[in-house]
Image (cartoon, rainbow, N blue to C red; front, side, top):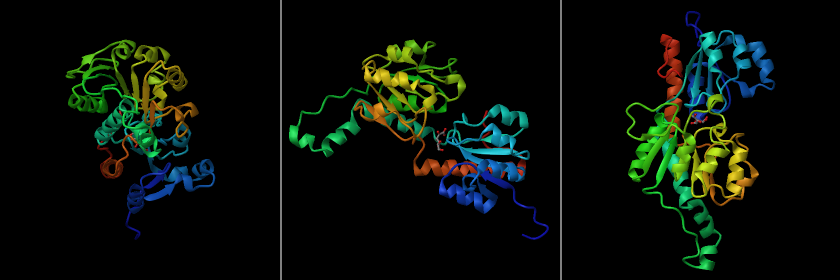
Length: 321
Ligand code: 8YV
């Protein structure tokens, strides 16, 4: 760099990111990785003033204390659509732009919802374990229990945003009957709006949760909703663990108050309640809704494009609301 070249912006990386994204960040910016510091808080207290940008993910977010330690922070670029780990009010009050990656992951999260739904209804992980353990060979052709029919069943969707609509479109292929619950009816949505979440649960064979996380939706799926879902109902969660009252879910499953659950997200990731690990009517995934090569790479590209555009023109392609 010669004396006339302006110094590239300094970016702080929070948490681990896709290796390709880390490389792109390194090529374009002066990158510091918070996890590399032996004492991250001390590092930020000492060096926070040099960062103009933060690159983080939906998983790690950034705390209000970390933002406070970066007085010159102008932009946060988040790998993911959920910004529940970013204090948006703090960012707003400081005039810090927050970029995120909406739409890019709609297909993969919707696919994951169906992987879980089919997995738990048709017991595919359980069937796989059955074959591998030799029990099929021992016990014979009709020894495995019957599953539940997905095609034509009643699907209740909690949250009809971008991903909720994509799930609904998938469900049309399965000729499912679709109702949804959201804070308000969604304009132009051709599916029946159910203002009461409990009534939606009572009606549904499968209740798929895809609402945003955060304080406003904490424990939306509580014991009353699970009771209403009933002993033949399945819960699928591809949103945030915080949306479901996890101890109530564990109790409902243990007491057979609901038929089963397919879960990609948990209240205290990566910790999963021990009781769930031994239940056959539960399918568990390690928060991989968006985790395909294609989608994660496209998300990484958006994180970079948001930063590049911000530093070039002071705006983002996709600004979090
Ligand atoms: C993230 C997610 O990819 O987008 C979100 O909100 O939860 C996932 O898609 C995951 O957090 C990776 O960091």
